[in-house]
Length: 399
Ligand code: FEO
Image 1 (cartoon, rainbow, N blue to C red):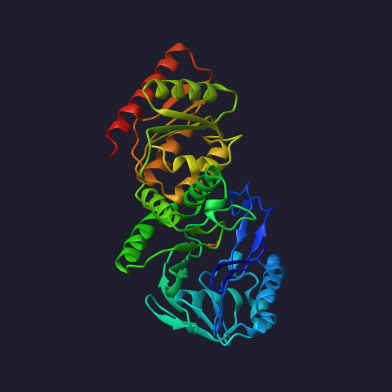
Image 2 (cartoon, rainbow, N blue to C red):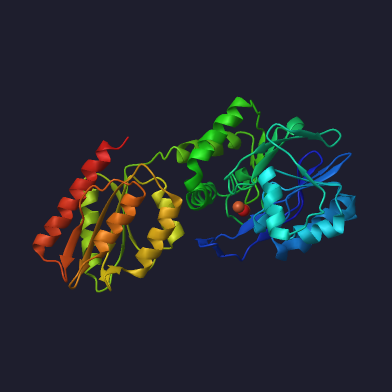
């Protein structure tokens, strides 16, 4: 990443990770960036650092702007997760900052991660401000976006929100702004990021959007810690998308997600998918052996119906379905109807286990579940269509 002056005397100084393909279980096929920002004022301030292996990129960029990194006075830790703090101990040793600003939870998390009692911490809370000289920073705590420690830093004079993980995308680019990259890639990666990282925190996001509105913060630029920066009218676009996603707005779309042993569950998936389409739903049939869990979650974000199928293996569901359900439950999707199906040889517990998992996260079952012994016959395909009809009817009842 080259250095970009995003506002007068405010620089993007982070690093591009072109090669990362797995981000704690989320497939990052487009890589990512670890954004860090530097304000050159009477006091020089660095906002977050980068993953440890990108420390030299950060130091090179800092050096280009201020020469000796020890000229930096303040480090602002908006978020302690290691993709933003991995290089923090080495950077602190080098810079010896006068102050490290963080939230109360951030202070605790920094101690728990780096075990340094004697760093010059200064805890800040929502509404606290510091002056760097010409520029003023207002802090906004944003707990659970993405961790309890997370906070935003708002540069008052520039109407710039440094938003940590929020509004990010895992998208490696040489360009720095949302309006410079493919719209299709941009919004797909923003949605994928929301679905796989932030969906579970949707109620917090709704409260945060309300708080930002109450604070009357004018936004001319939103600079997240991953991906490209939103500027001008694009700020309203990403806020509107977060408003929709956090309220679980969905389309007339159904997903048939399945794992099959000897093709019987696969045949059922196709029969169910065809009938859902006949009911006017947009349908995707997603075999867990060829679709990554995090890509499926991106489709889950705006789907109204999920029909989950698994053959029974050793009295349980198939392993990729168990993996998917564990991941899916953690992200707590809402406002969807579900149903389960699958083939079996002699016991057939997979459907029961899927139903129990859905009930545990309060997703309503549109059908008690369809089990077929060994290979489906004509009457079983009729039962698949009936299941699909029930799901389509339940979708009509959703808001
Ligand atoms: Fe990009 Fe929660 O770290």
